[in-house]
Length: 317
Image 1 (cartoon, rainbow, N blue to C red):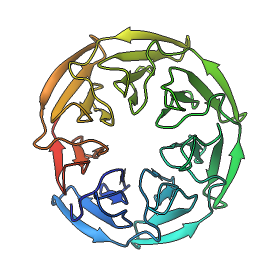
Image 2 (image 1 turned 60 degrees about the vertical axis):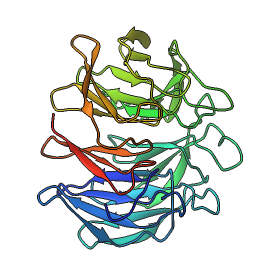
Image 3 (image 1 turned 90 degrees about the vertical axis):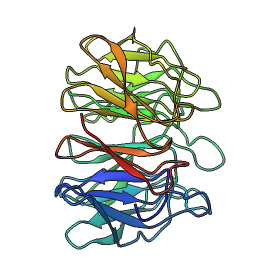
């Protein structure tokens, strides 16, 4: 990459390029953005965002534009949002969230709206609030509150269109989980994990179950959530404890986990058919708070991360 960064976002565009935006380089909060072209392996600088932001959220909307929202500007947590248009390379301001937040989680729903959940406001946990962004209006509206205040959690879009939120932190590590129904805007409590965790990952497997792995305070443990029963079951443990890592569901259905605090350069593969983890080679650079993006050609692009400088690497499944 052209700039070292961590706590940034990476979004795979409809043209196959990857947009990396924002983050922190160890000295400065960033508003810069750049594009990776898989056909050439080259990074090119694109227009900068209007605001510096770290630990924000990003999603590719149905019209191909990229929405980024919230984060920390270096002067505090804020609620602003902006849109990137790949056809012009230009950022434009859109509606603010109702609540400033960082370490929140967001997801594009099947309805085309963006759901933002929880987060930290710079002084304390944000209330258990959640809100929706409507691309047709450019406006955020409050939706139902979660049952628990949480940040540094995970949010996963299930095959039936509901959203599973799991774990996180609110002064203590959480094992609770809850489900959001976009048709009603209501959250309902579901089964709790056996191990509390935050800064973990959650991956929706091809069969619809959700794999959570690692996380601060959880060691090497991993669990599976079955949406049909609302029950969590223990699955194979990783060989290395890690948090602030990434997890990517590969085209073959296996899950690639990379890096994270405490894991050095290690990566591992989870096989859902056996429930077993295996080593999958090492990255050349240790990293955490990085990103991992599945490219249209099936390769995984890993970018940045704390301590990794400007490096990026490709994984071939």
